[in-house]
Image (cartoon, rainbow, N blue to C red; front, side):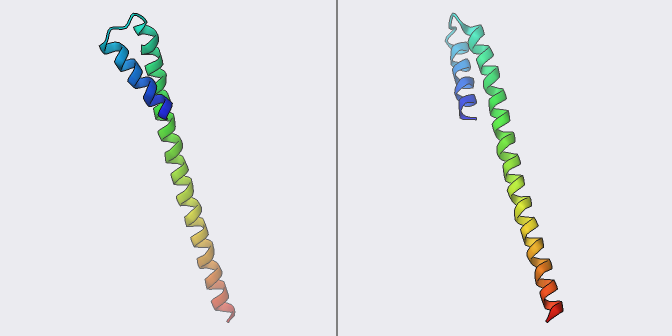
Length: 72
């Protein structure tokens, strides 16, 4: 994601300063945006996965507690 931010900033800098190789930097900026979106998706899915794992463990402990109370 950080690489995407750097590429996007570099592309914008190339555009504002009218660099000779602007088209290449423009393409790299587009790739940078793809990196940013992919990074955000990865971190979002990782966060959702962690939440679901925590919830699964919480439910498992609840049912184990209920089962042990019925035996006692």
